[in-house]
Length: 171
Image (tube, rainbow, N blue to C red; front, side, top):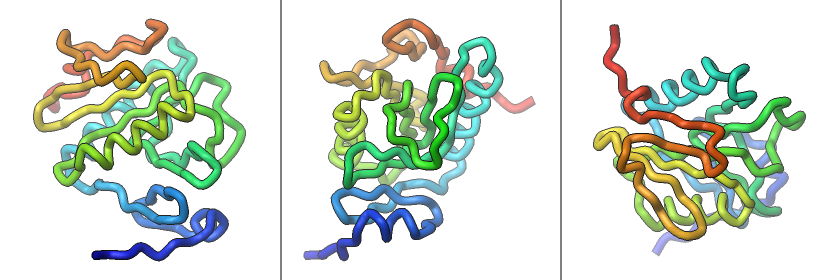
C-alpha cells in the first residue's frame, strides 16, 4: 500500500515540476506525457487554434494550470479561452474547451476524475482524443459521446474541428 505525502496549495504553487503535475486535495499527481504521438497531437491542436485565433476569437494554451476548486489544480493538455485571454498566471475561470489527449498509461478512473473536475468547474466543452485510434469524444454531464462522424463540435457550434485535420501526413 503506497501513501502519498500531502502538501499545501502554497507549496504546490511555489514548486516547478517537469512536466507539470496536477494537484488534488494535497496530493501532487503526475500526468502521463512524453510520447511522440501525444506531443505531436498536442502541437497540432494548438496550431489549429492558433491559425484560427482571429476568426474564432479564441486562444489556446498548452499545459496551463487551471484551478478547478480551492484545493484542486488540473493541467489540461490544451485549454481554450475566448479573447481577450485571461489576465492571470493560473486560470481560475472555466476554460471554453478543455482537451485531454490519451496516453498509453492512462486509466479510465484517473481520466474520469479529471473530467469530473472540469464538469464540476463548469467547463462547457471537454474533448478527449486517442492518438493511436484517431478517435475522439465530447464529454458532458449526460455522458461520453464519440465523434462518429469524425468531427468535434462545441456545444454552441462555434468550433467545428475535423479530427482528420489533426492527423495530416507530413509534407
